[in-house]
Image (cartoon, rainbow, N blue to C red; front, side, top):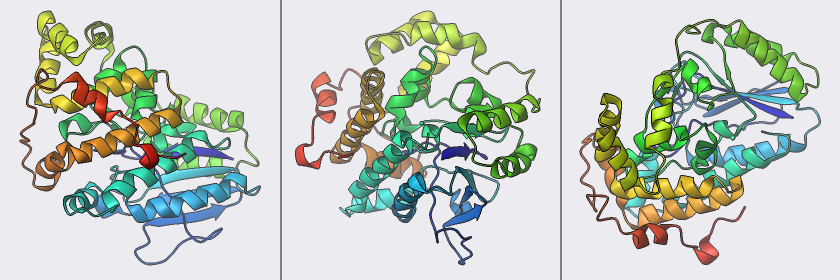
Length: 373
């Protein structure tokens, strides 16, 4: 079985990269009113639709707990050869996690705040390591299709967190220092640029998605080569924005040079010393981010580049718990997302005040509470 993840208006927000979940009554369409996930079996294909359009299909705990056993079933089901995942509503594939719910739970000590990260990471591991599946959830799929409506970003340093659900795995594996740049600055990639950066595997115009889906569903016992051939053909027929250069094309060499450093302070120094408009803008962006998050994210990606996905998820679970303990996450996510203040007061307020020991402590083993995969 293969998993093809179709990004339609993807928003990779807050704690979770754009991400797919599914489950329902085995082998039939869910028609229950208000169902958060719809599953349809078409021949040997499973078609999954995230169905929370008013919430931009944001992931909640119920969806996580339903998806995991379904994927385990499909992993060994001989009658399911391919799974296609999409979002309902036309505005978003998935806007990440239901951060409002997690934030409110954390403020009152509800265990949801801890359980959400643990169970979501286990789900990520299932998608990223299953021999039949393919890199967070959708970014861990074997095939990842972006359209002109796709938006990808990892803005976690702006809310006191870090690019989790495997961000420490796939971001360091992008070209040069691009992954570190995206992680620290939260820079947004749109449309074809998501594929050019290597986050998506293919680009297909949104008007062709329905036909693409039908052709994939009609494949009989498809191989990786079969799916790749279909996707390649649709990409070749998608000329929209093909003449436009990659949004960061003229800056790639500069990013590789200025973001090559042994520390965040070194990167900031490089940006300020360079003095170009692009470098100045990135320096101003980093100055708005959580100093603690910047240092955690830097170390996370440095370490993740040589780790397996499983090792990265264990590391990131430790980081998620450290962020809650130090309250840098719940306090600032409330200001930025819930209260719409957009003016968090970071503590510590400067990079210099964030000690190396405090960062190191965030990566320490949790003992019996460590994530088990």
